[in-house]
Length: 319
Image (tube, rainbow, N blue to C red; front, side, top):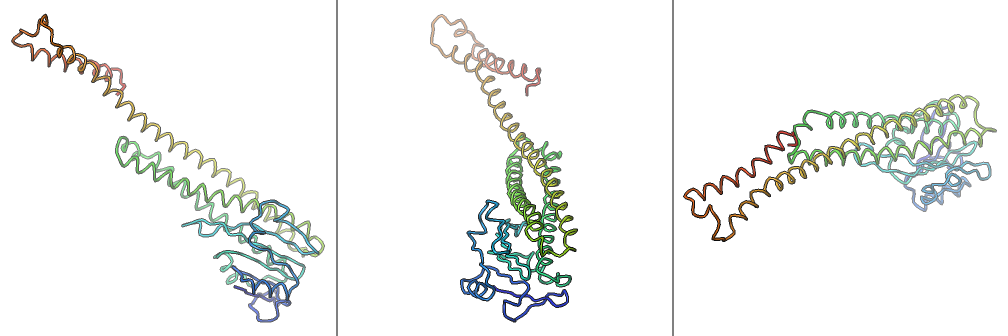
């Protein structure tokens, strides 16, 4: 889908004018025909999806003929099914082209809400970068809330009382799955942050000749915001790793409890089996064979031989 905007007195509005006069052209999952039209009317090359998915800095940050070619992945649907959508920016002194090969509510909201204070293409890209960073901050805040909820659940009394029950396995399995999803989301946000952190200084340097002076303070603030989010992301990653270690620790405890029970059962069962094996031998010289209470004696010895090690385990508080 192709959407074009023109600016009048700093106000963005959709336009049907020739694309060469548009201040901002947005291409969402563009068709070959749309890409060809934009290339023909603007004279600017449009990066492909494969170009935007390149991970080396030379591919994500480039200048060709005075035009900046920038790209970064943004996170979509973080609450349900996090996905990384590659977004490209083709920025010249008078025009901005954005290319995205996926649906992004961030761009849709930006088109609806941010329609003032955009006197140039550079103002638009800075505003877009600011919106992306703000969205990253919202996602990390959501991750913090999720981790706090998981932390309370992992270290709650319910987890202690659930020990040895089937629902403990269900709780631990659910916790591991949730931590895995959060880890995937955090890694995607981190990738987007790193790319945004590279774009801002590159934009300041490569577009220094025609970059409006009023954008320099905003870019500095944006750079500080990205740095603070990187620190916060590191904090969340450490907390995520701590909760993962705690969950795995509870799983190990549960497994050890099972092994302990099996060990106790096997140890307690050995003496009775030994006694029963002895009295099961058919020897004429066995004294208890002629006793009137020989059968009761054998049963008593079998029971006693099982209770003695069990009492020893309980006294040592091994069980």
